[in-house]
Image 1 (tube, rainbow, N blue to C red):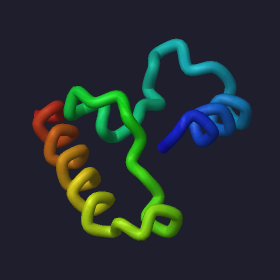
Image 2 (image 1 turned 60 degrees about the vertical axis):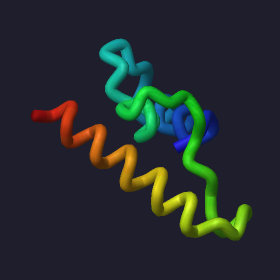
Image 3 (image 1 turned 45 degrees about the vertical axis):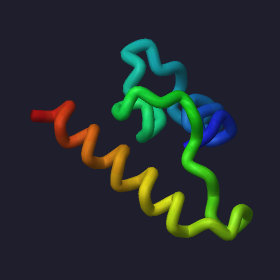
Image 4 (image 1 turned 135 degrees about the vertical axis):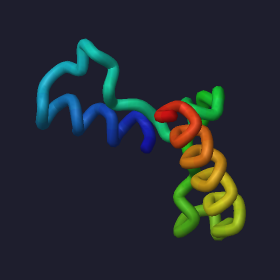
Length: 62
């Protein structure tokens, strides 16, 4: 998710005062976006970022 995605989600559903809309990597303590591999060509890095974010999210949940 990037700033544009967050903008459109807020536009569709209104403000997010509870801050439920977050970037996946924020659970891993990172502020950067996961790059779109169709533009970067780096599918491996995208996969690694998603695994890192999901792992951190699961730890957050439980």
